[in-house]
Image (cartoon, rainbow, N blue to C red):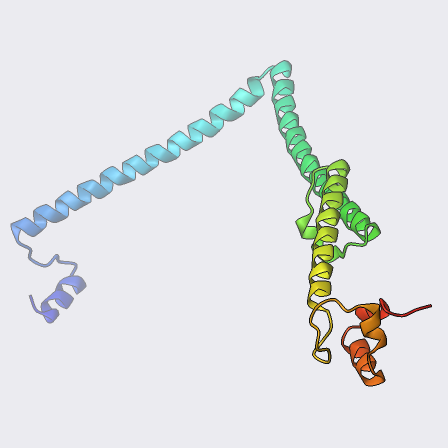
Length: 194
C-alpha cells in the first residue's frame, strides 16, 4: 500500500487492507491488552480492598490490642536507642582509654608516637602493657649503649686497639688526648682524675 493510499484511508477513516494473518495477530493482541487491563483493574480493586480491611481492622481492634501495638512500637524504639547508647558508651570508653594510655606513657617518659603499640581494654591492662613496653625499651637502649661502648675504644689516633690503661692515657700527647676527646668524650672522661 502506498503512502497516498494510507493517507486517504486515514482521512476517510477506512482501515487499510490487511492480510488474514495480520488481522488475526491484531485481534490476538487486542484480546491480550483487554485481559491485562482487566487484571490491572482487579489489582487496583485488591489494593483498595486491602486498605479498607486494614482500616477496618484498626478500627475494630480493642483498646488492649491498640495498646499492645503501641507497646511493640515503643519496645522497638527503646531497643534502637539502647543500641545507640551502647555504641556511644563504647566509643567514649575507647577515647578515655586512649587518653589514659597517652597520659601514662608520658609519665613513663615514652613518646606518645609509640601509643599504637600499647593496647588494652582496661586501665589495668594498659598499665601492664606500658610497664612491659618500657622494660623492653630500656633493655633495647642498654643493648644499644653496650654496643656503642664496645665499638668505641681508642680511635684511629691510637696504635692499641684494646682497652686503654691509665698509664697509656697519661702518656698521650695533648694532640692525641684532644682527638680522643673529640672522637669519644665518654671514653675520655673515664681517665680524668679529680
